[in-house]
Length: 403
Figure 1 (cartoon, one colour):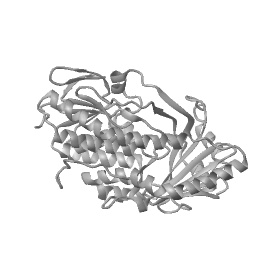
Figure 2 (spheres, rainbow, N blue to C red; figure 1 turned 180 degrees about the horizontal axis):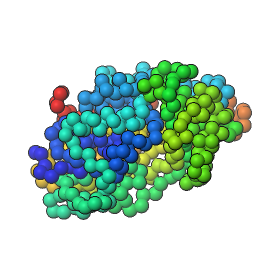
Figure 3 (cartoon, one colour; figure 1 turned 90 degrees about the vertical axis):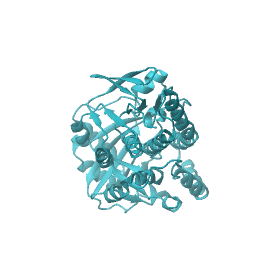
Figure 4 (cartoon, one colour; figure 1 turned 135 degrees about the horizontal axis):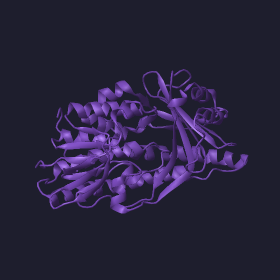
């Protein structure tokens, strides 16, 4: 049964918008509240992300497949090089997607946001910009959601408000975070010359421990990243970020180095890499979490946004199957969503943490041995790991085709 009050989603990121779209396709009332204005979203600096097949496929099932394929580039494998351009290892990914699944895709983050916002608008989902969720209070028959400019009442509250989630903080207090000891610059540059179609290129300089990557994201553009060791919160003087990025990139091959130099200095993004301590409980009563608010993880395997997409469609599936006429039924549906997601997210997170925290060998002999071991491991484990990683979520009540 459809609830009287809308389901309130805090946050219009990838997870929040996907959840809203999936709920609307099931005929459930939903409204999104986002702290950023529409202009702030449109004018934000660009970056790219990878939608592995496990996320591209459920987005396709929400009716977005053609738009994604038109806006993005396929990903079939990853190639990892040292700073001299010598191959360290290759990871094949495309052979291990599931039957009838969409391919893995690299896309501009803002291109994906535009696709999701447009799809929500077409479904009549209200997205309230410049209205930030600041807290909530569960009442006898709903959730009173506090905003920076008032309150609204919902049948449920979904905290999709990121790694510094307000909803998470009220649920659990201050959740300990782990800083990986590294920070990143990201940007987008016109042109795909020198790139390998459908193959992200990764680089690592052993002497400086600077790493990076570059990959096409559609529209004759490439996204790039730089990563290096730095204290949390450290920043360059205003106006010197671009020069710093260029200086870091000088140890990496020209296919990446030159793109950093050509990127608009005002279009750089700097992000320290944190992840949350794992916790089994994501919600209480008619409140739950999804995406980074529930399980922020290292970005080394590119699964943060992907797991948010998986969360979103399973959440909508659980609510569509529930009895939403009563507060008890709403709460039971949210607990069902959490139960269905915990083991999957925990495994993906474990893989990401293992990759992110692997010790870097010192010395030429140790690095040579580690390279040999890495290639041998990938030859054995590649199929099983990528097959499991790219498994699309199973849904018990998929929205009707064309809904």
